[in-house]
Image 1 (spheres, helix red, strand yellow):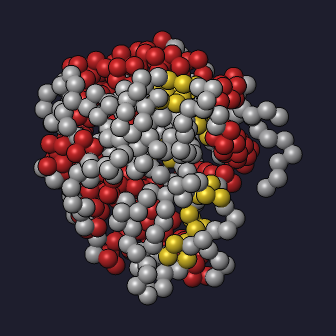
Image 2: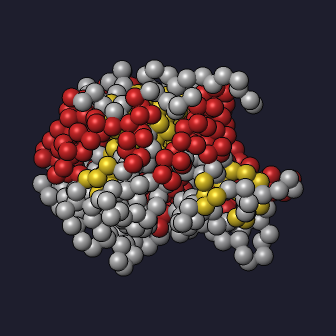
Image 3: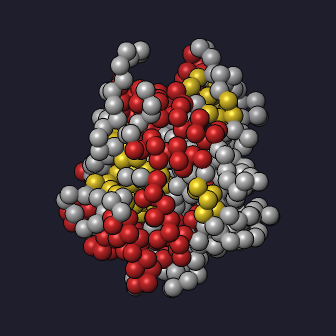
Length: 467
């Protein structure tokens, strides 16, 4: 649809940026923090681990000052469960809790809205060793963890996210596991238990902190058929249901998507559902939907010729296919980053429209960005015009989606600062702020404002793009 005049971004729009605890904090074993699965995750040789990361734990006041300088209205970050409760189940680590209280207070002092993710890929190791999300004890542990967070932080945090990219953990579990990758049967049991845990946390927040808002944060993307062949269209519908609607239908409507459930039945992956689960899931209503978006995917009908591969260890944005479901397709209309991720700004508008039309809940974009190999230039700066161009195009499509009628409440690109990329360490940088370190040399960890920092500051100041 063509709009002769675009609607403006809302006056209270949450322009922000995002990070996650294990990718930015460091201090992996300080002040009583327990081990998480990420502390044992084996990185590729020569790629940075998460022990120091960007040292945000020790430098958060400096980092928040930079957020304030950029004019950020919101900061989306995660709490490391094992920093607050070292074994995931036992006593609260007061020093760990004090860090998050101080961070939130610092944000509020600079008029930055905290957007808190409760779980972002870093399950406490002690829970993992007891079966992780496949064990119903982890559901109970998460509910208790949620209660502690709401009691201690609920008066200062208005926006909560339950679980980050649950669909990525199920479809691409390699980077999120400390050991052998579970079978798909076990993964979908984990998935169901995460649904129950999120529902419990959602209801608990509404009981304890009625003014706060909570929602899920899956990785959502529109799926295109490779051709107009009806078989490709069916494959796209199937994969979109399995990859996306399964997670949002459960969060927003409280039931299993019918196509996804048929897939689970066909494959023998249906989970055990405890008495009362479905009633609980139906009664837990999110206040908004968070959405991580990087690009669309294009798929074709599965050929079942031995070349369709199950997506056990694929990258979350690289579709590799699954026999009997879909086959990865090509899209000649889209560019790719140097890491093989597609770039599809118009796909953001498409995805936002599909999500809004299905659920009619406010949407908060909690991740979107471009990862690039970067170094300081001879002048001591990073001239990242490519990031400016990327975000400019995506912001424009977000405004078009608003003009289409989508209720978009905020946009938090990935990432505020360079973080340890899960797959590529500091070889793949996303931030508005450069962190001066390499994979194996911490150097001085100095923060350097990239060109995109100043550009985004101007976007926020005028509440949108230039006319």
